[in-house]
Length: 587
Image (cartoon, rainbow, N blue to C red; front, top):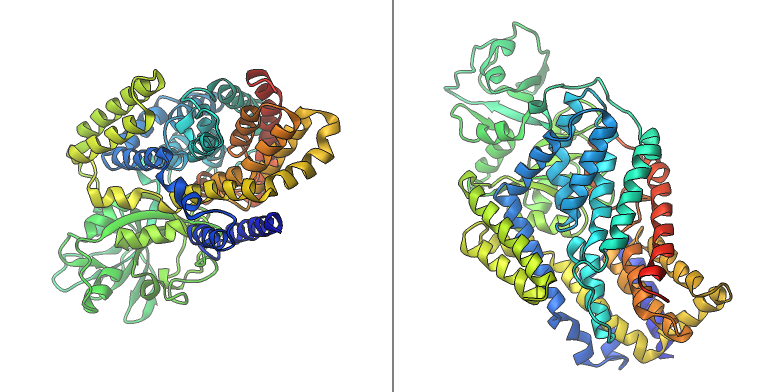
């Protein structure tokens, strides 16, 4: 009966993880409570995972990544590498993918994708090729680069902690590197020879051609009393000096046609398109203001010290299909939308009435805690937080050097990895590369709770015999074909589960079952664990992976584009895993 209870909870958890109607951390904690109340696991087993050193390691990586981002180091590195990848499209793709994959081996792939997004679009414009030709390879290389090291993805770190509890040695820093490099090499060859023929070419000639005009948001600016803009002709006004394109004017509640000699008047609400930094500067210029800011101040809300962040709406966002007005976004979220960007067409409607779509980029203002809540609930992905102090970049470079030394020292066994990374995080805080509040804000607490809780779920499966029951079912279907076939079955299962679930959750759900199957056949437990780990990071079938979400809108992709291009790459990566894992970790 205990086994059926655990399997039932597993099915319920997978369903809830897939729908995300309830946050994954709440599902995990609720599941732990039920397992303890039924007596399947003890209280100690339920919370043992929360004290694992893997949690410290992951938390430290989140802080280090945020410090490097906020000091501008990642952004500068992205611009540098994108600029040096010039040449023919094939050379550009090869150079870009190699650079992105190398960085992603040591950094969160979503952060790396966001870092390169602007520079790669700018590079496409300079070379007069469609951004869609480069953005999908960008996302794929960031994801697959994470298979090369222990810290390349949180999934690798999570599985390393889980197998330690099962009596195996943790995954070494570069243990996955041989297979990871082959997977990445195959993906590079595939994209150059086959994938690039299938990547859609959209919007080659539309839009601005200069790199400086990339990511121009739509915003509403109000002309106030005493503004020098009053009386100026639209196309010869200070808006041109501020590098804004006037799209539309609303005057006394009525739309006014934008004519060359039309003059601006007091109280005009001007719909403009402009770069994010220029929009932020509007907040400091006398005589004009962003409409949303003015409305908030008239309501008694002071937003002067609020955070500003660029975010991308995910396909799962509750805002998709609704406008800001119909969704009561400001009242419901406590956040204001300063500007809107849509990658596939120029918008002329007023922001509050535009039905939002997946891939839309919003410039949000408000408490970063509130922004973080939406990100944690998979409503949106934060690309940039605009609070960088330029004089911190040198300190950020110093942290990057220390981080590299920590990786080297821990891989050589001089310092435990968790302690090495914790020390780097503390150095980032001590040198004021990141504030303590920002550090806490950037830790993905949902993921840490998920990893800790799913570790306890592994104990529940072992205690109840559920792992043995499931393992026998899968091995019964495939055992006659050999241990490699059984391992391949678990790899395919992991790939499929990463579509509705997060990569880490899928790996941690399949892992205990795969380990039990290996044990029942007398095969290598480590080989099965490595196969599950790698399989969780190669699924590129849909745009639901955060890195793919980031490029979905700007690349003007369709859902079928990822199935068409990513399907073949996923299959090839899976074949590499099935062939190479038994060679490096004999069954």
